Length: 264
Image 1 (cartoon, helix red, strand yellow):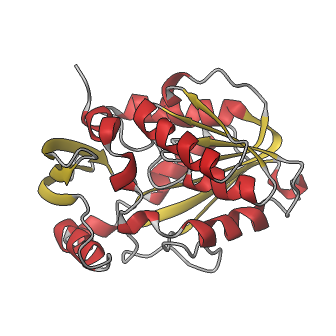
Image 2 (tube, rainbow, N blue to C red):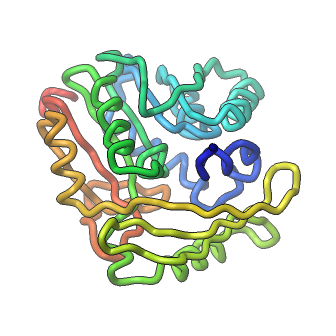
């Protein structure tokens, strides 16, 4: 039986690129470059790369990137975009819960909920973190965004999604989210997502997403032997180490390092 995230992304490549949350690529890559020390010899793994927006932009800037994703439809769109630009970007279909890489990359990215934290169990989410850690060299750095569990304690998830949708371009669609229940015992949001796929067919899915609080993320990463874990607010298109995480941030930006002080 397919999970909701598999069904959502099986025919959603073109529509995905129109989503408001997919518009901050350039500014986010500025931040990634700075974290790499602008060293174009460093190798990057982009987990849950989707339509390849970060992988393509970083390749355009001269970096070596491998993008992996569970959705062949998303990868097909990514390859088409790269080919149109004449860029040689490697894309592969892989499941983030069982990646084959070990000590091969200087940096691993998981942005815009690239797999983590969409899985149906906490154990599966942890497997994704384990595989990301295993793929890194030492020294190495993991950068990812995830849903901030502090946000729904103070705010309406529905109101947030409505505000984001209203920020999109007039006349441009986008998925609509309706939260059915936020479970305080599991920090999971049970919601219904309504969207139009790339064939113009209206679809509706029952979804389940895990929100995390900072101490959980820190503990999970420390248990994987990361020597440093830093957590910030994740501003669309404007990641910054100066943004202290608050209850106003829907997402958190996590930077974890192996021997991070020797990285740059």
